[in-house]
Structure formats: structure tokens, C-alpha cells
Image (cartoon, rainbow, N blue to C red; front, side, top):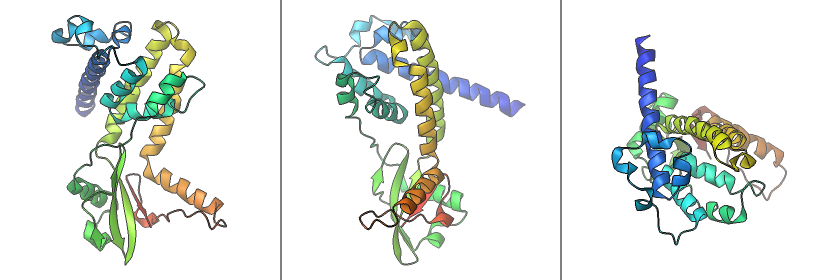
Length: 251
């Protein structure tokens, strides 16, 4: 019971801090017209409650440009939502689509020591008993995972590793997004046309699947089977014994 209470307190504090970040970033990028009706002012410090015009970005920036910058500042969950919205001409105006399409899913890598720790925790063995070589410098780094080169039984492979703590971060953001989407539909004129609750629901299902690297492995295997007779298409082979929900090994 005590652990549950501590967990609930921690979750409440984490949500409060994240709501404050969301409100502050929206305010900084000139979205006071959303901060006020959504009731986000209660999360702001007294310092932030000075007149909004002091914090808005340059008026030379368009609203779509400010939205892109705000999503970049809000982090990986919001960047991915923006990327999804950039593929939805049925609900987003062309000017917003053009701007949101510029969102890049690249972030600084996390430490190779953490990558090794995750691999060892998931696969229950030291990294160098699994691979003859494991590259410390990642080949690529994105918001959900990063990729390292390795050598397995004399063959070159790549190991995709989910970011530490990213699931907690994304789940917190999804809960906040769902809350804000509901408020948008109820309180902001014209927002219901965009169906924010449904959009956030769709997005939540997509990004949760993306968090599970074993799901990605299954998709790769099905795609490879469907195009097995096409010599123009090569799909990396999943090394199943070295793949979990947080680690995906491919050759």
C-alpha cells in the first residue's frame, strides 16, 4: 500500500512538472490563446504570470512556424505527433503540414555505458559474451532508440536499443495529450473539427507499438516473407534470440 501511495505521489509530481513545462513552452512560442482557455495558467510560476506579450516569439514567425518550434521544444512525443499530423491533409491546413514536415526525429545519443547496461539486462549476459565486438559510438540516434554496430559470430549486425526511461516519458506525455485534447474539443472554438481526442487516441496506439521493438521485429519478418521472391528488396534478418521489447538485433 505504501509503495502504491509513493508511486501515486511521484506520478502526480511528474505530471505537474510536465504540465508546467508544456504551459511555459506554449507561452514562450506565442500560444497564450491556448494556455488561458485550457486552464494551464495554474501550473505557471508567478514569474511567468507577467503579461504574455513579453514571452511571445517574434511576430515575423507564422503560427505554423511557432507550432513547429514549440513541438521541438516539447520533446520526442510531441515531435512524433507533429510528424503524424504532417501526413494528415484531411485535418491539417497545407501551411501547417509544410512546416510540421520539417520536424526531425534526431536527438543526442545516450551514453554507450547505458546502452550496454540495457542490452545486458534484457539478454541476461555480458555484452562481450553475446557479441565479439560492440561499437561504443552509435550509428544513429532517434527519439525512441539508437543503433550500434556489433559483430556476431563473425557477421556484422546492428543492435537497436530503446532509450532509457523513454517509456515513462512518453506515457506521461500521452496522458497529458489526452487531457489537453479533451479540453480543446470542449473549450476552444473550432477545435472539435480537428477531432483532437480521436487523433491523440490513434497516435497513442501507434507510438506504443513503436516502443515495443519485438513488434517491429515481427513487422520486419512479415514484410520479408511477403517480398521473399523479389530480388530488388532486402530486409534485415532479425536475430530472434537477441531481440526483446527493448533490444532488436538485425543482420
